[in-house]
Image (cartoon, rainbow, N blue to C red; front, side, top):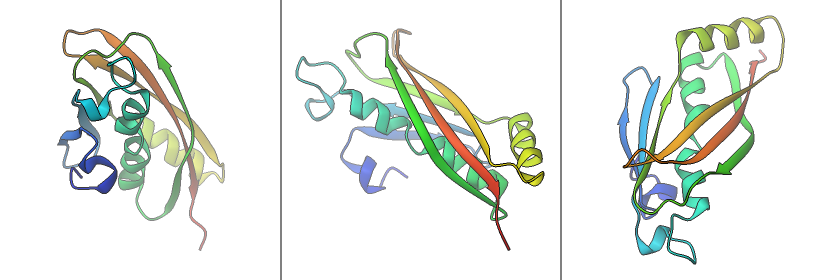
Amino acid sequence: MNAWPPFLFSGIHVQHIAEDFREVAVRLRHTPLTSNYVGTQFGGSIFAMCDPFWMLMVMRNLGRGYVVWDRAAEVEFLAPGRGPVGTTFHLTQEVLDELQVRADDGDRVLRWFDNDVVADDGTLVARVRKQVYVRRARG
């Protein structure tokens, strides 16, 4: 995924993807290209680092029998990112079971997922929320 064009020159580095696609660790380097006007991490880069993973993780785990889309996003900036930042995504079997049961009942499921973006010193820099849409595929 590190060669994926949106990540390639953005300072975003996927450090780890679990074989079962239930855990992903991502890091954003702090360079002049990822800095905002005042020299801290650009908020758009922080969001881009988090953008695709919840949808991809749910999609890969539920399989072709389900339609999965990103539906909404929120970013809360809590402290300036003055160096590299990172986050880890964890998708549990319980969440997958919940999504599958609700979608199998015919529901169009909307679920929020949260991620804390943390600096190397442990400072909480941002909280990113993504809403994922799931339904059973037709046909």
